[in-house]
Length: 438
Image (cartoon, rainbow, N blue to C red):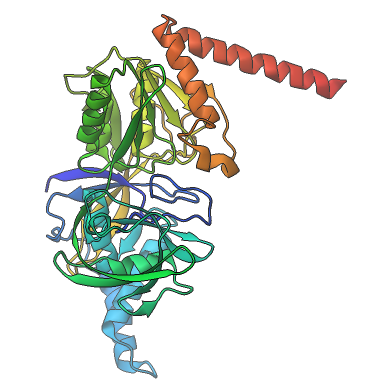
């Protein structure tokens, strides 16, 4: 069966409402990642169809499991369901692998996973957060039921279909608010100190925003990519073309805290700026390597800087690694997460799925990023307490990116910029050692 490679982080509350948490102080375009745990997946194109089970070469391989199952089922002091025993055996096999990335997705979790990778779900279109322990609207998504109903950023949700949200976490709120397209939900809000009001909303299919962008001073396009789902490359291209029409002559692509998404989208995004050659290589345990190459039609002339940090993972690292290896642009920020293994999502007969590590991926220059990450060409640190400044005038990493864009437009070569960065670092290191000796 043909399989698509998917790179995704499942620990984020992107599952339905673009949940964001103000508690961690890290709000990323409506997605929160205190510490991303990226995963790279392959998934069949027909995710609801179970794959044909592989046959073991020796029936004796499973005879012991069958024997123990039968003994417990017939002789254990208390009655235990066969389903519970089988699930325990499956979980035990997975645990034996000692691989944090190999796991089983229960039926409901698998459904959530599929929503995340397509970027669509049934909901009302609000980005949510916790502000002072209160469920709060960060922002309504444009042209959604919440937006059309006049719900505003800062409105607090007091009740969901009559259930109080006091002490309710984001994940539970998300589960309550999402639902089938066309179904209704009643939300009670408070606005300011005194105003209380209710809204009955009809759920619609909500598309998760892939990108946001703006034109910075100096005709610099700034595009923030929040993830890599089915429409990301087209959305980035559309946003870039729109900003070019407004006068943009260079680009800063912000992949900070971008946890990943679909591999084919990572290849397509890279292909927007790289005309030809390998983007990423996927190597199986047999040593077989699949190379994913750039497609034609790239703009390989626009000055390009990519922002990365420790929250940039998987698909973000594929894009950053390709750009860095071919010398197409300059990476600015901090070392990325470092996730270089591939997991295959295998649908099972009970509508759950097995997520299993099956391969590794390498950059065009055969670099493995696993547990290493990508070291940017120009290192600029941004303290966690200042993450809320990302994309603003007080963002030190963005300031450096803009300065490098100006250098590129002035004719400075990428190699020169990288070389200057290394010299500056070496000089700072020598000064530090000198002070230590004195």
